[in-house]
Length: 607
Image (cartoon, rainbow, N blue to C red):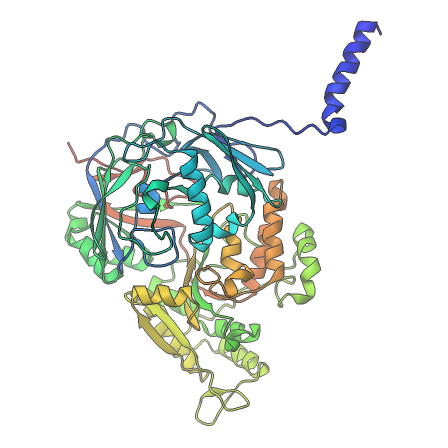
């Protein structure tokens, strides 16, 4: 080898090994987007989201209905019931989420994102043109104030991630960096999803209390007209700074978005039938087939659209509050699940057309499989095997009834489990313990939930055959929120939607802090170290296979824990709407999900 060739080889070797021997930091560079795994689907020069129509006309309005009421215009705190629309359309975040990918963010207020291979830190650079609706610039000071305020005074959903931040610092005129205190690959994305508020508006005010002052945001809409508790109207800002961003092309097309509030869901539907609302989301397949023969439908003024999706089933049903000693025993929860005659209820209310939720992540590749835990799932669960309830390692399936009203076989199994747990039926037909205390509990329901009430009515009748006579309490929306936030219930109706990219929010749903900390989504009060270990494994995973194994293991823990008696889910969303409302033919991966209606819809009358 010539001398020049030798020197060139040495130079290349030093360049390759230099970072190893000299401890040089791994190279990173700004990007237009970030994905939890792999690469973003859209290139830096993308012109629109794939499920948006860039030629959608602007104008018109959409009127939507909500049940209950509202008493606050601050949606970022625990107290109060906030009005719809503000958090989504008035405020913006540094990055925006594509609903066509499991978890990918693209620049919104931020023009770029930068992180290291380990995602030990993340840095954002603000767009110079970003403005609040009052014309003032969005500054790094606004961003840093928003993050700290939300992390310390905001809703608990913000506080978990804030506790993992070691340092937040401004690194340039329009850039800031977050350094993380512990390994957590999702944090780089979560830091791009916090609302950015105008610091000057909140100076001298208590952020943590309910407010009737309209917040100033940088989003496409501003709060226009409000009558507290009755309606809120949002008006599209014609001077919105972000209207020409590729991410926003074809989005936010209505001049006005209005939310009207009614006493309960039944009244909302009647308002839609009467022409007071423009759209209605039907959750019952039997009603969809049976109750849409009113004049507006038969005359063509209202059309019915079905929107398929590819997201997990999530969990919906009756949740046990295991903080209550009565429900601390898994055998009791299994017995009451056996008493829930799903097949009969589904046939009665849905004509048997809807599939049952079989696990929290069913209907997706993240859902647990049947039978024994094997491979990486088993390895992750093995250290906790002795502390896990039966069914986690061995496999667990929900009990199946015979379809008859009496459901005798499952009732006998339920009675045997209750006897094992120390309960027996006395001479008066009442289930009681050894101290002759009856098996008594309260089911708390939200006023106006007619379908839920029908489910519970059938269930209560079945429980009576076991000597169990629960009290059913129906309360208004505000009371229901207060009682569930403070876990003041024995059993309640519970819904938790889940995505294709579960992450830090799972601590809020199932983490031990939620046993006592108010406002979490851990209504069941579970405190299972194995569950938190699986969440940490998800967050540390660097490849999809490891991530999938951790989620499936978590799914086993949740499902076999018998915390919720699941009902059904649907493969499609059913939306009835006036014919002037339109949406693109190309549907997103998540289907009818936040980011779909009204975001990509538009108003266009027939010519």
